[in-house]
Length: 365
Image (cartoon, rainbow, N blue to C red):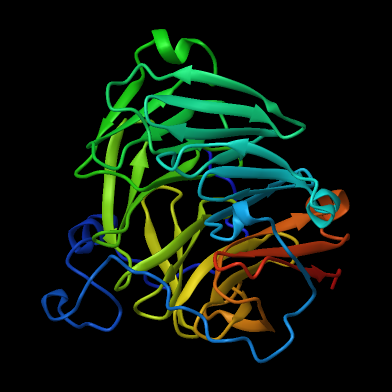
């Protein structure tokens, strides 16, 4: 199968054979070499931020009460979507500044949403909710044909949709977001345990790299959608915080307990490619396609750092003060920045303790 070029990573001098990587997948806990029996693994949670003593970089926007405990943020096509406890907020930056974002009611039982081609999809147990960014009040509901329902969802570049459940040992692949979801039988991959999150990274000229995560034991697992089987399951440090997908098979993760930034590649099987010690209690991560930076935010230090990853060792390029208790972030691009990297982009961060939304403009370099 044709694969797109690896744009962001150097070639490893002595990569592990695939068979050896699979054998070591669950045997290795972290780069420290400490046996897992002596450490508490998984179930990570960020420490509460101290009072910020510095002025946060950029602009801070106050948010309405529905988003004082925000837990997720994604951007696409100039829109910012934020997950609160019982609402999604949808709007442009101008709408968020004016407090004029659209509100979409969701249940506390719904899982993390995904966005592709201006379509938002939310997994809510036996059904998926969906709407266009431009028309968030026009909501469609699709009853799922699989018996388990869904608490996790990911769009694939083929137009297919992957869903999973925290309790069930299966991943289901549907042909698309349409009425056939109810009537058709999805393709199914049996896995070892329930799934907290599904992520897909699009690869030029090849199949998407798709992973699932499970926080209770701090693991990540690749999924082979061609062979419809599970791949290697890797321990993610001592307890991961969040994952984010980048391009060309790239995935970023925060090792909250181990205080690391972790970068994985998933073109064929999931592999840990790079790791770096960072500030205490890292949580939110995001990939900056404009400047080719991996961003990671720390709740212990109220800071966000950006690293280049094009060499063998990540190099710190930015370190900026943030609002307190950052839980999620993403990059908001102007059209020129998204297409050619020559325009302006902004790092958007959100707090889950009422500190609001932070906008940090990132000019061309």
